[in-house]
Structures are given as C-alpha cells and as structure tokens.
Length: 69
Image (tube, rainbow, N blue to C red; front, top):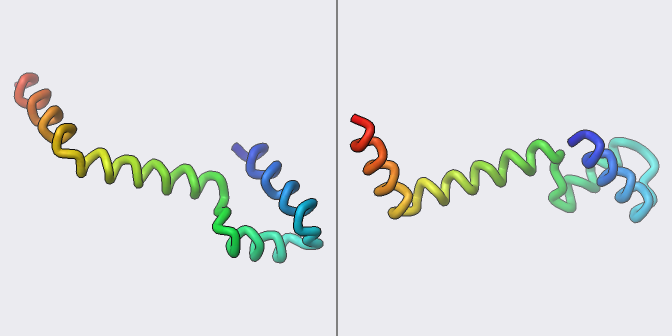
C-alpha cells in the first residue's frame, strides 16, 4: 500500500509541480486525497455501516445466531 500511496504523491508532484512535502500534504488535503490507509478505513466503515443498516442482513445474522444455539 505504501508503494501505491507513493505513486499518488509522485503523480501529484508532476501534475501540480509542488516542490516540498508540506505543499504535497496541503494539496492532498484540498483534493480530499487522504493517505491510502485512511481511505481504505473510511470505505470499510461506510460499507459496514450500510451493511448493518440493511434489514435483510440483520435478519440473516439473527437467523444464523439462533440456528447456532
């Protein structure tokens, strides 16, 4: 994942011609490009929230839990 994150940084360096790390961090913040680990964690949390909010999934989990007892 670090390699992919570095690729994103290198692309932004070339596209926006930023010269230092502080400018890169500011550019990523303005574009909403958090670190790759943060993006993955945010997407995972969003997925889990939607999954737990889905009535069908909740019923299926309940049925599986009752069947195991």
